[in-house]
Length: 163
Image (tube, rainbow, N blue to C red; front, side, top):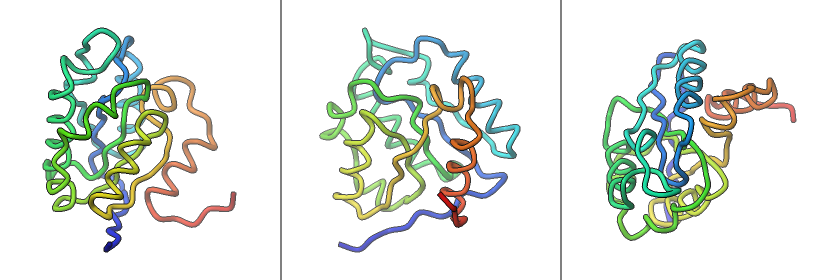
């Protein structure tokens, strides 16, 4: 398999915040994350799945979440996709994801928890390196730890870190 490295994150790039797992109960946290990234010099696009839910899952249905993921990868204006949160639901999307779209439009894809299944399957199906990283809601929508902030930006911008 050919490994694909996404482009590094640069100031002025657009970060897409995407919810494909657990529902966002407090949208204010997503707005806080958006404000934070904008204060750091980035543009932000928020998926509609951050605003809709079905029971305890993001979006109105699995198809809506998979469509949002496919659209974010297709969107040439988005340079990095940061998942909003984990929870439950990512596994339900695997048969609805268009991995060819991802392979043809490689970009940073980041998250953890339930999102790990997407990180692993994207790598397996496309060769695209993905990132186990902080997420929008809990890590950038509430109290932002300096270590989290520094590690996130250094890793995604390709800067060497002393851990």
